[in-house]
Length: 116
Length: 114
Image (cartoon, rainbow over all chains, first blue to last red; front, side, top):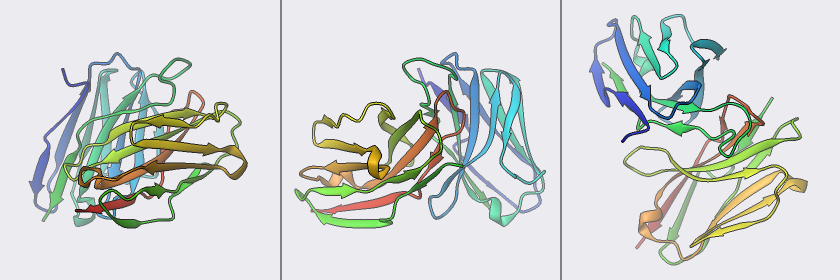
């Protein structure tokens, strides 16, 4: 069973379109994240949700809107796609607080978005 | 603010050589966690190790070993007798105690040639 799953794995679209990437985790974690990896491999956090509430928003353009219908899902919707949005987007989850896995994030396989 | 620096952007070695990947971090927290992740050409992020700030014991796992030194804020990763399958981008990362934001270094691309 995949712990953190993202769909689609690949997405090719035209500039100006709107697209969504979905993420689901079956680990029972209370916190989910979106990270962006650019062409130079830099990994940067975009958003973090804890129990469906936004707790981190790292100066991401308003065109990006995360939605968390429940704590097992965190979707990323992107409006008016631009060339610079081309990247690999990773979803992750973790359980905040003390415990064996404190601080450890579990990542999905990534979704490669290409904007033409 | 937290920061992780991996000064080596790319390393190339020949199979069976030992190689050390450097990682230096900055944080004001007294309790924190350090990680190494591997990203093979297939693209997924593979968890390798997690280290608590209060546990400076070095760790060895097969051909992998990690050297954590709080005095120099470093958490270096050594691969002994490297193999072609070790070719990947390796990321060092830092998280706060019960934290909710993993800060990554820029990654080191390791190429192991046969």
